[in-house]
Image 1 (cartoon, protein in one colour):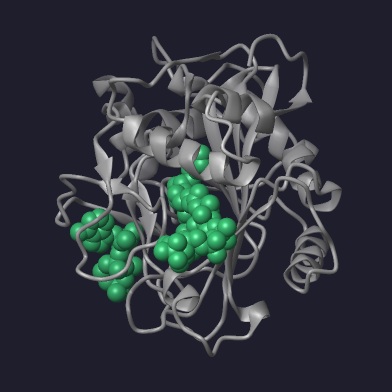
Image 2 (cartoon, protein in one colour):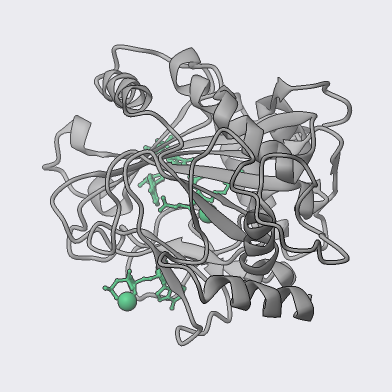
Length: 334
Ligand SMILES: CCCCCCCCCC(=O)SCCNC(=O)CCNC(=O)[C@H](O)C(C)(C)COP(=O)(O)OP(=O)(O)OC[C@H]1O[C@@H](n2cnc3c(N)ncnc32)[C@H](O)[C@@H]1OP(=O)(O)O
Ligand SMILES: Nc1ncnc2c1ncn2[C@@H]1O[C@H](COP(=O)(O)OP(=O)(O)OP(=O)(O)O)[C@@H](O)[C@H]1O
Ligand SMILES: O=C(O)CCC(=O)C(=O)O
Ligand SMILES: [Fe+2]
Ligand SMILES: [Mg+2]
């Protein structure tokens, strides 16, 4: 990869934008004629990603595609989100999460309490996001052509109440996943409005996807932390990091080993993003018993058992298989 890195630097010296940021384009006309490096590990060769974009993902573990999702689509996602918050729509399997500082306070009206929706795979309007052709076109570059939507989320990061609970600690999403190989998994995360450092943008450690899965646990921040918001145990706050500021409709694709989190929301608005984790349907489930993932698997099983009525025979793998939905090609394995 050293040669690829050198070449990337040469390319980037001529850019007037961040090295991981690209315009959405429906053609391959932006391909640049650089010779192909010998081996790509994280991306497939097709007509969607330019060599430059492939190199950026291989090197950094993420790329931002500007303006990928239309304003009208985002407005529709926002509308249905608001209807769900008002409880006008019931969605099977949906998990509505409230910020821990709000759960423990009595004076917040319901519609201002929701910090996250998870598992909206049964809500057609929101799930439309996961099937948007322009998103899947990019996803295929990382997963290949059989694509499963494994995990769906709409994040409504609340204004911080002063307790810093709106932060999301630095983590790797793979910690939560019982399927492999990790290189055939990708997250698409779309800004539903302008997202900057003020309202708590994503913070990433570029290149960290080339490392291994780290141990995760609740961060020791000396206050309440949100349920299941595990952070990397030995996180070094001095690691070189990048704040990924995005406009409405911009979409970041990132590897599940990329270390990322998000900062405090210092504004009065609820900062919104919608995301889906995809995996190749050719991936396989793993048993995480005896690994660093055992802590989250036990926690998830505990919550599932409480919801489903204490059926303890449901495994962590089962929970993933139940949620997964095919969005392209054949459901070969997962
Ligand atoms: C496999 C799963 C995740 C896959 C993620 C892929 C990568 C993404 C990385 C992440 O997003 S990490 C964060 C993921 N977070 C979650 O998955 C949390 C999902 N949320 C939930 O499951 C529920 O919202 C939760 C269990 C937290 C609350 O469910 P309920 O609405 O049924 O809770 P209820 O009101 O009955 O409260 C139960 C207890 O939880 C407490 N609680 C509620 N919300 C909380 C919160 N946000 N933080 C901490 N505790 C919370 C609440 O105070 C109460 O405590 P006590 O039993 O002591 O009274
Ligand atoms: N000790 C820690 N362990 C894990 N993650 C941390 C730790 N400290 C900060 N973070 C994470 O680092 C990221 C950046 O957080 P931080 O609160 O510094 O926001 P910021 O965007 O840098 O804003 P600010 O302008 O306030 O510095 C967030 O994901 C946050 O949760
Ligand atoms: O703050 C965000 O929107 C990102 C959250 C995140 O990384 C996650 O839920 O896995
Ligand atoms: Fe994450
Ligand atoms: Mg900071």
